[in-house]
Length: 273
Image (cartoon, rainbow, N blue to C red; front, side, top):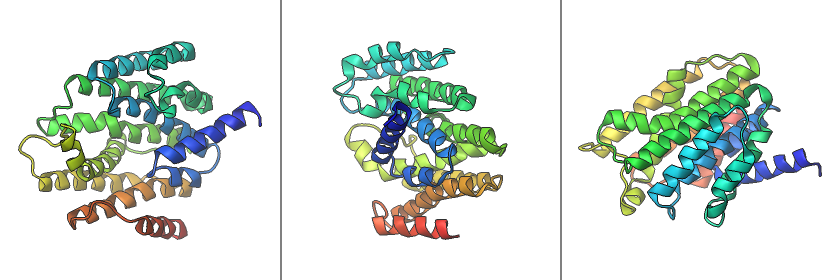
């Protein structure tokens, strides 16, 4: 197997392992869109795993995230410098993080600079929130945190759609799309986060307040979709959104998550539309 083909196979395998939400919709995209979105997602997942890592202390997270952000801002990503950065933590960090330079190699020349810039912003924003101890006091804090960890995913996707076939989407609505998906996860993981001493819920907010915040952003996601006419891109965007809405409904009913059968039914219904 040639090196590019092996690299693409590795990327597909790691994508399948790391993303329940995005793996299926990525496989429905046409080439080269599937490879592009896949590699871009893996780049963002690489830095996300640094921020989320349970065994790394806050100072280490800041160091890794800020240095990675700086490397991504350069015209040419220095893979050797990156490998030196993560080498002391290679037994702790997952493969998706250790191989960031590989995922950048898979990203086409015409869009890789956008992916680098957005991932750099994400890493820097995550480092700032690690420094603050993820202490979210009010709605502005929640907006800021969810912008860096998820809104930027929406921005990156919009950049990719425009690069691919000129599809233009509203970047503010794209941020709402990412935020909506993220706050469903915050609601789903609230108890788990509390156990490890972290809360992404603003001071004084009830669970109902967080539900309302999530619904407002999911409404922006619906609006975002109206600018998209390319069928495979629309399919890609509809699946995570439908899964998020169904999960939100389940959480309101007191369930922790939706079943695998429900996931399969939602995906099949959207694919057959």
